[in-house]
Image 1 (cartoon, rainbow, N blue to C red):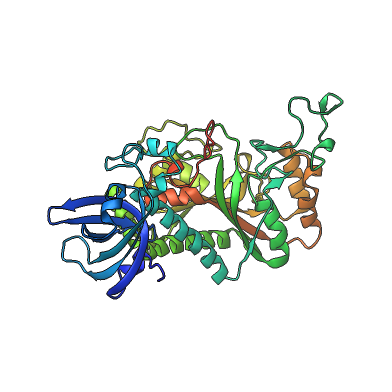
Image 2: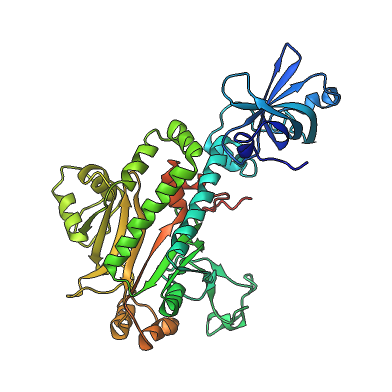
Length: 461
């Protein structure tokens, strides 16, 4: 007999079934019954199993039917006589695959802090919270692919090992096979010609530059993969390893870019509310009681668009006391972004046309040269969720921008080549996937929305 997942059992017809999963709770009745709550991860809900103590195998396995044990139950699916569930399984046979001794299994009935659960990352998926987080994460990943595939975008895999620093920030993890205790040298420097790739390589911070290559041939592409930042930050919003979604589109200007970003966000939020309703109810009840209202407001709102200059004016005329200075030419901080979205406009906003001096070399200059065609999508309760721009397609302007930013054009020769041969207007943006999952679930710490967080001094599991 084939196993039936619990999410299908709860909607299925009565009859003989086979269910497999992990015991969440057990309580015993004086009438000679045990009630087991079984969960298999397919949905938030458990299925109740009623096990008579007269079952032939029961005396031998009774001590093993504890929280955390893995079981197989054959029985009859019937309408439940008790409260709290619509259906239950009357067991005819129970097998214990793997016990979880009460004395040593750490996930008992008491509540555990998220900090503690990070120390047992191999077991935390069995909790209600982390099961719900991963189902939402899964659905969002599916919806990302569906959104772009429905629009005719091609999914592209860009390199994880790279020789270029997309952002020019230098905060990259180096990849090498050299003997670090005695690296080869030439002229007082490490001789990377003897390294595996014959030159200095690192883990990528972004797939954007490589994505542009394919947008210049295939028109519309998107990447969705792991990226890495060697930034020594231990905040609740930063990871050293995280996933990025980065579409690149030929023939898109900045307005097209902003239109796509707004449509993308609304699509993802609507999709997860529809397909993860039970999990989202849990987050709305236990994690953030305003999350569903927030998501619904975002999907029903048109995003306000204003220039960086107008945003600065809004902040300067406010009566708020900010920690970070508000001056033209300074980057907007999270406190500024949240003030604008939560108190001024009370909805998502897109800020565009940022000062050239605080943005990356590849962003297209506006007339006058003081600003670039960059944009950030800002959400209430979060701040920036998407950053993007129209890319500079003019060879001479891009070359000068590299020099102004103290970048070596020779390292980006292939990127410059795109502007020599059939250059075209094009745009793109990036969305940090974990930050999206964090926002949708209301989880406070980004380490709790990725299966295995990588942060400074922490690379367990």
